[in-house]
Length: 165
Image (cartoon, rainbow, N blue to C red; front, side, top):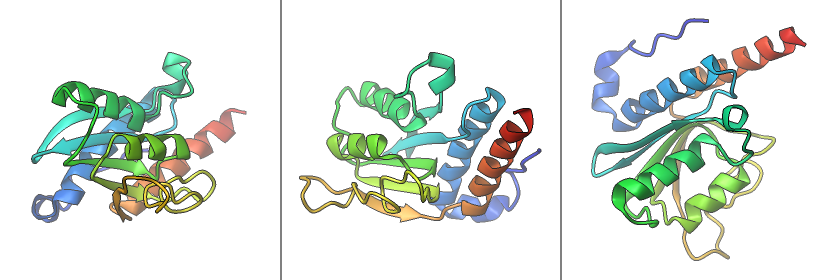
């Protein structure tokens, strides 16, 4: 299926959350092309993208190769610091518990995601890790940015996977 991520150009130029989510969506499309679960992420610091990644679990044969984990590693290298203070991650699907925990540990300032994950969500849906009062750091969350596009991409991917079986 084709996805037009250039539509409504003027509206996303005004809204930085949608602008950067479109970049994460481009990464998710790369994952889908590689037969990976289509999740993409970008990390922004001081208004600039410092990391971009997509799921590579199958490619790397690594259960931890989620888009969020790869992007955090890249961002830490770009900042020369494991603390991602002042950084915002844009990711197409709500992070799992592993990724959410890593965001808290990395002191990520903000998380913006597209579609919730009712089965495995580690930010708000199932495990509210990023805002857990028992933890030292809390990550600000904005959800629902480009939710329909992100949901459609995931739905189409899993329909295609089921058709192969």
